[in-house]
Length: 303
Image (cartoon, rainbow, N blue to C red):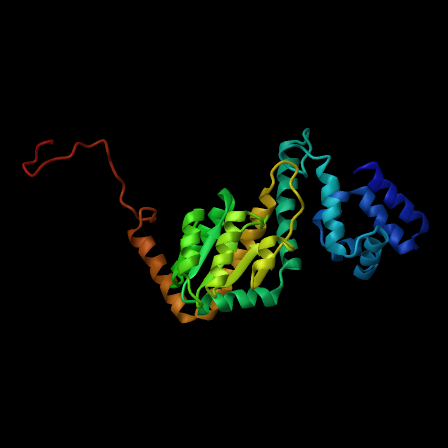
C-alpha cells in the first residue's frame, strides 16, 4: 500500500475507539484477506460488528463499504505483478492458485452484494415479454458475453439475436420496434458506436437493458441497469474479474428467465440434452472411428 494510505490508517488509529482500532489493525496485518473476505467475516475476526466496520470505513474517508473495498483494491494493485493484482512475481504455484481462486470467489461474492434484485427481476420480465431480444457487445469479451446470452435465450425458445458488428447493431436498432428488447453488454459502457445503436433502439421504443458498471454512459441510457463494479485491473482496461462478474449476472438472468417460462423451457432443455446425448458429435456413446482399416467397396475389395 502507498505511504499515504498507510498514514491515513495510522492517523485514524490514533483517535479511533478500541473496536475500530482492532479493525484497522486487521487491515494493516493482511489487506488482501480483508479485500477477499466478507465484512461479516472481518467483523467476526475483529470481535466487532458490521456497523462498526462501516463506521471504520467512514473514518477513513469512504462513504460506504463498497467504496472502501474498491479503494483498497486500487492500493493493492500497485504492488501486484503485471499479470494479476493479487499475485506477486515471486509467488510459487500453490500461492498463485490460492490467490487467483480466492479472488474469483471474492468477485462473485461482490456480485451478490451489488446486484439489485428488483432490476434483475425487471430484466427477466422484459426479456420474457419481448417480441425479440437483440444482444449487443463491444470488444472480444463483451462479444462473447452477448453471443453466450443469445444462445441461452435461443435454447429457452425465445427469439434472440447477437449483433457484434457496429453496422449490424444499427440495423438491428432501426428495426427492433417497441416490443423489442436490447441487451447491451459492456463493462466500461462508453463505446460511441454501441451508445449510438442503443440511442436508435430507444427511439424505436425498445426496452434497453444495460449490463455495465454504475455511472457509465450506457447505464444513463438504459431503462434497466444491471450494474456491477470490480476493482481496476493493473494491466488491462477490463480485466478477468469483470468477465467473471458479467458471466455470473448472465447465469442469474438465464435462470430467472427459465423460471418464468416454466414447463415450456424445461421441456425444450430436456429435448436438447437428449438430442445431444444421442446424436451429437460429443455424445458419450459415439462409435469409435478406426482410421486404420481401409474402406471397402461393395465388391469387398479395398477402395
